[in-house]
Length: 441
Image (cartoon, rainbow, N blue to C red; front, side):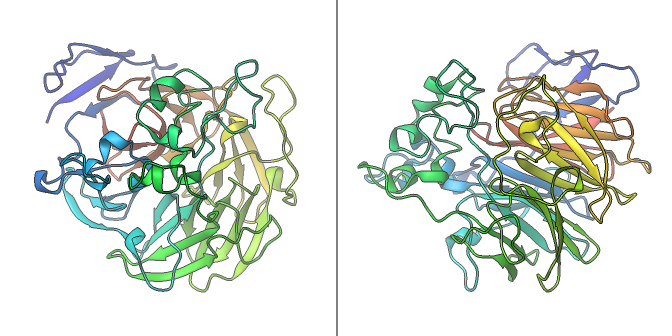
């Protein structure tokens, strides 16, 4: 297996498999930070006869057997030139969307896959599955909620907080959108890849060439399946969004975590709270907002890197629970991590790449595999790297990756997970559409 070595910020291994002689990565900030090398040919290719391709990856998780679980948005996030067999008229032999839930072993072999989006009894499959977690019993949990499309910076097409141009329209779903959107508001001011499911109808699906249809119902549900895809539980109802005081539903809940018999939900793409439910019955137990205060639906306003920290969550894109019981929350567009006790009592906060605007810097976090979980790995899709953060001080001590298409580089890295050996797995949304494995030196 070919690997690329990250050391002192430079990859010195030759990328023979891709024909690239050298790739650079952002220099880490401290010698004590761990170093990683990318496993170039991970995962193994899908069977050729299936013509499968990944859509925008919105969740990566590792289970107790070190199996890697991936959820992606499927055909709705594919460009027209990626889904030829689904077009009318037929356009090409490649490609079909891979099933939206996939299970790999640590070597990258596909072990299982299932596609709840193709129909099921008793549940509402989300238009935009987002976030995945596997509990100790092997059950698979999936959230729902489209991360906000990249936003234009002030003075270039709109104020922060306004949707990007082209969101959900037929033009935005076409292959030329990526080129028009590059560099505007952080990668995709006009891109339809991440926005297709948020507003496009038949045109974005690739099954028509007329005007876009009406948007799908808003996602407002969390789903639980057995590891083989059998439906077990739904909390919330697709198309029925509820506010931050709800005890029965959500508004685009983008991430989930399980601790014992409790389900923690980052109800933060529409609401501004962490909500906790009984993982077996779905009964509501408690919720909290930023700094442990009562959550509200008040607009948090534009992010100001030089101002006072916001008293409200802006966009919650992850919730993770450490071995010591601390609850870590990604407040993505506020560029920060907040830490709580399980009862919602605020403990501390830290900022990562604090001057990042657009989509923000803190998309997902994962803990290192040592007993103390010394490090946090922070997926930053806007700056296109994974930051390494000291978990106790919440100070950034290093990073790996940079923007680009080559192995070890990133485009929209929005998911991160770590296995028991310390290997780091990443998933890329928007037009990244891949998963990668990084091996600890």
